[in-house]
Length: 67
Image 1: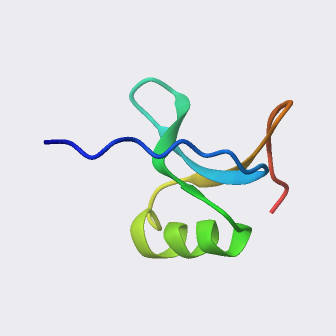
Image 2: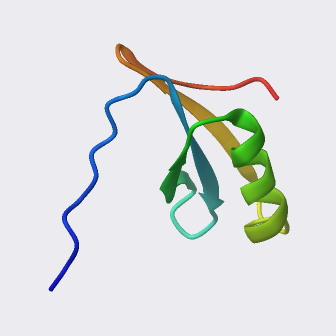
């Protein structure tokens, strides 16, 4: 049996996006992070050879971080 989903209620949080060359667009990775540092560590460990960026998700929308 699947575990129930944990919905995030705290804002802001951070998402990592990776550039998909096939469709020429940015795609969200599945994980969300509580800190920028955690998102940067994920990029360094998991997606380093690909183009990646960090997006901050706030209650009123999302935007790309200038890092």
